[in-house]
Amino acid sequence: QEQVVESGGGLVEAGGSLRLSCVASPRSLSLHDMAWFRQAPGKEREFVARINMISGSTNYADSVKGRFTIDKDSAENTVFLDMKTLKPGGTAIYYCNAKPLFGREYWGQGTQVTVSS
Image 1 (cartoon, helix red, strand yellow):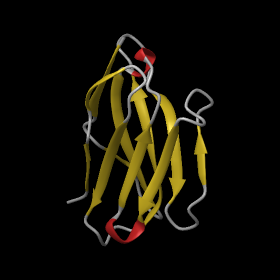
Image 2 (tube, one colour):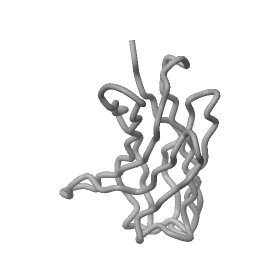
Image 3 (cartoon, rainbow, N blue to C red):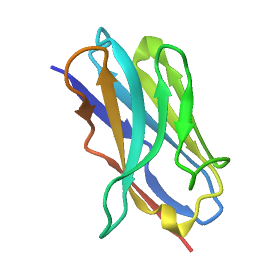
């Protein structure tokens, strides 16, 4: 059964760093891309970053460019999100999205990131 699991969330002070991980299984699942989204309290879910699991090309939301880096381990269907210089506005549940080459996309349950001011 396909599933997506995030980890690495937590509490961090403003200006600090955090690294999130996301694993899509089974490993045999052929992915086109994986992405991170986030949803802050009272707001809609928004795009953060995406990586093509084949080419490695990336794109980012303007709000995180230069501070967040998305990376991958394609062999393990894993992506990472390195978040630096975190701001209180970064407090949100961070969700991982996995889009296979064929078929529907999958979402994880999310991991909470709280940035204290």
